Image (cartoon, rainbow, N blue to C red):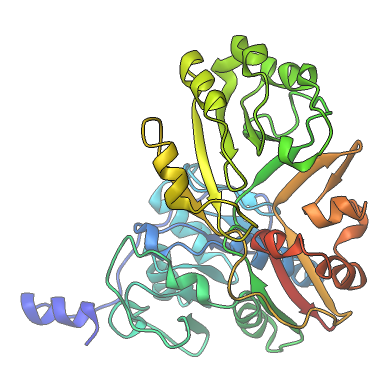
Amino acid sequence: MHLLEKYALATGSKIGKPQILKKFFPVPVDKYITLQNSSGMPGKSYDYFQEVVNFLLPILAKKGLSIVQIGGAEDPAIEGAIHLQGKTTINQTAYIIDNSILHLGNDSFAVHMASAFNVPLVALYNVTSPEIAGPYWKNNKQITLTPPNWAPSFNPNESPKKVNQIKIEDIVKACEYLLFDTETFNIKTIYIGNRYKDSVIETMPDQVIHPEFFKDSVLNIRFDFTDKQVDLNHTAQNLSFRACSIVTEKPFPIEYIVQYKANLACVIYDVTSGCDIEFIKKMEQFGIKYACLFNSSKKKELTVEQLRDQLMDYCDVQEINTVPKDIPENLTDSNLKYRSNRVILANQKIYPSRTAQLLDLSVTDAMTGKNLVEISKLEEFKEDIEYCYIYSDQA
């Protein structure tokens, strides 16, 4: 039974279409779809709307359609959309939805509003069920999608979020079908890494990064990406004007950068191949924030228990495994492509993965199917794949 029917029975009320007051808002485009990427419950919010929009934009552009993002001011902005989140009242939002050609979003009030206005919609459900909390005035122009092999958890903070199991291509296809009564989209998701949605900015220690480049992100300086002696002058310059973390497998003269410790978010010390207690003591002495990691996917001389015994007076050792268990076996198809939200700065170029950097394949030429075949042969790609979205493009 739908919740609305339950409420009606409990209160003795009749169910009728709501009368929602709409107030004009000057939307800067005539033809558009609306998108809301948030919900009142964190567990409902789909993490891959940016990928959906990336694929939708060229499809919509052929028909002169735009995407208008609605929602709260705190909602992450989707690139390629017109941003009205946090700029409208609920009555102005009603006007915007009523004049849209389609609404796309998580299970939220906007979905029910679109349903009441008979606006075609694509809505994503996981925490609750469409049967009990979906659009009540549903018709054949309104599609609700749920994860495969799924049952609602009714947990507003569901983790991991099952809504993320809904395929990107299924959302795009549903939108295309409702808008144009056709399905020409033929992308197929092969793999999405657990860290794909994380924006990670990293650099080699021999570079000074412009302070405006991803200025609001912590810059990871990868001492562990080089066998050469690290010149701390470049690291000091980066620390002088932005927040940085240092990732290292070896001790280094920490005293040379102590004056910049206000901008040093953390020293991440990989102790898998051994730990220098004196280095730990110096970081303690200078009040440097640090974390010790043990990577169980790497070759190691000591067990994590032995390292914890050594460091019991200082810190715990966090055990990690950077190689996922579900790596696709066959990545030799030339139709495969990949995307990454990881940025590695080296050789005055931008790379989307460590393996792309090792092969000197910058962002402009790294993500083709041909290069993915080459990249996937390197052992380092087992760790890179955690940051990747891999898909088959038959277009």
